[in-house]
Length: 633
Image (cartoon, rainbow, N blue to C red; front, side, top):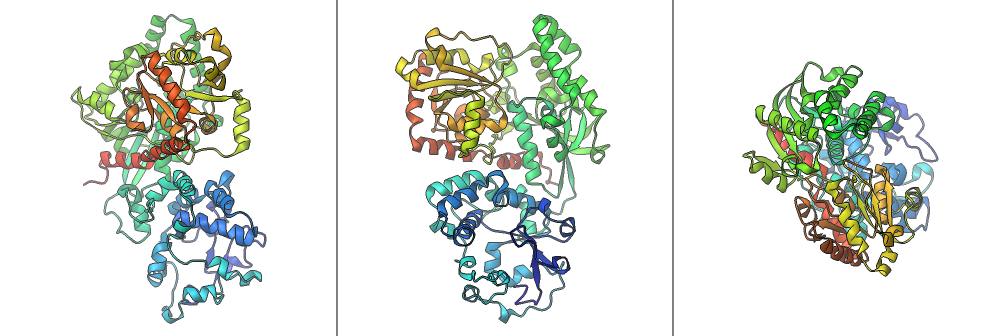
């Protein structure tokens, strides 16, 4: 269109065999499908226009391109799977990463669907950045003209080939509907559906923006909505859990919340993270989560804390912890080392306390309104599962929240009812699962690595993933497994994955099944999806949960689950899981028998994976923004 209708030539910058076009630097318009870090800085200084299309049409096109042009005759289905997975950064890092990365930087976004419907109107949106002459509308080529090879661009003429029929195949929206099987579509939606919804693409092929706050900026960049007439607001998220060496449910929550805020930024909102007293940008905070960036002092404190717990009596340790809380020491050590100038001396419009017991980190920081996330009230309902110090700090954190007239967010209806019983109102906002991380792993090299590293059995196995502590009910799970008939235990071993936690004591393993129960110890985060994929079924018979993220992670990896019938867990699983009374060994044993049957059923695995689609971090972030009321005057 730029060439035929406006008389403006363009060049291409890519990394294929023939490299970037010659003298691309002098072109008014330079096209690329690479990611920003792969381009020269000079290009990134130009105004950026991003063309986006339904990701399903995009991966179908990539699969055809490989079958028809790059590796002629290669298998379309295999090419489609590779484009969907985009393993190890292939296929321009995959649809979700490509769109999230470029939409952030783009001044204008043009949707393929809008371009087809009204091509002149969409190109006219470039006028603020390009000196466009009056369009010669009569020169606009038809799709038949493009297929016939009359176009200068897209025909392959520049590389001495006739590729028009390959590169102009259908020229319509939703061509994927006749090319993707149901299974292929399920896999694509599992990996990319969350981003697709933010950018207005629905599972049925229609287009609508289901997440108003998050997608508002995207709509503005697409020319579909006027910019919000509000001044920029500031939000400070308490994120000290990021500095801890191991992921637990709360650290996972904080990490995913910040990651989602970074993936879908709002121009009207500046988000900062408060990590052990230091105010950081989101990128700085996420960067510090990596092991290589952890504070040596914080690591020493963590191990010193655990050493003291071993050598001191409980009463002495608890009194010492209350007198000199570890969080205060860590806060001092980290705060003096790193503090983003961008967030200093600011009175924040909102503060988000992600864990009540971390309220002390807000000391010295001013905010207009406070919102507190409550994961559970087990420090009151189940105090036997907590150290005395943790109970005290959580109680003080709740008092701090009430004193500051905080709004409350509950991560489950169960927790919301517990708050309501204490005359505290909250909105229910379920947590999510990152389906670009937790999905059925097909990488056989990774699967083999995980099997070897954690010494997994050659037989099929049932899996439990949790910190080994009383609340997780591992002794009853072992006892129930031990009651199974010998021939069943010989075929289905039990794998218990997780590090030792509070009040951990070596479990009594019945001698007759000692060789069929395996402890892996700590499992790396990037190995968990392969572990879930390998498992025949997942067991989570906890005595109490505020939410239960491992259940959702297992389901996202298409692993059938056996869960407790208590607290929040039924909210996650719906009618797709086997539920049992966690206090009854017989009930758990019966559930294990059912789980072994379901694990062999592809339909149950599919149901588990699809159930996980109901829980996304984008939806959670949207609900957080709604509760914060940042954009309401």
